[in-house]
Image (cartoon, rainbow, N blue to C red; front, side, top):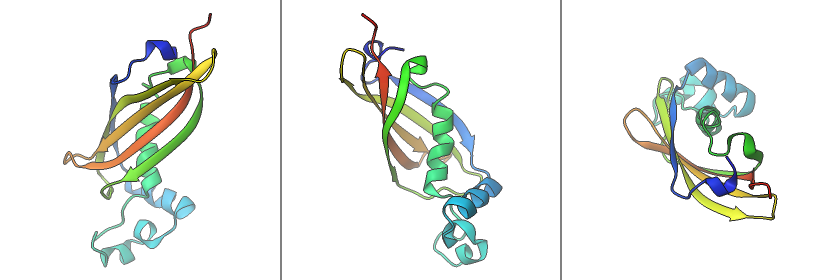
Length: 143
């Protein structure tokens, strides 16, 4: 969808994703090997009582679902930036769902502009676990 065809406030639901314990451990051991993510014995002694998912894994699991329904589709040129804020821990077995909302549009030139999408992610208890704000470059309608 061309940038001019997207409206601020438009929303899409991001399908549920279940966080798998082994995927958490594999991701943590490879990309974020701090003990709270990678050492179950250590994690038992923390206030969480178990390992928690690396924040980027939680984000990327939902992001992988979002890109299947993103607002721009084939008119996406490239990603520009993403910021993520984590609110609550995510545990193995948690089911995450997201609500993606267009929160910004700007025109860069005659060819493309910037689309800003905010994704709020909730667990199965309806607790907000993270918020991501992603900017992407999207094609404008050809003239």
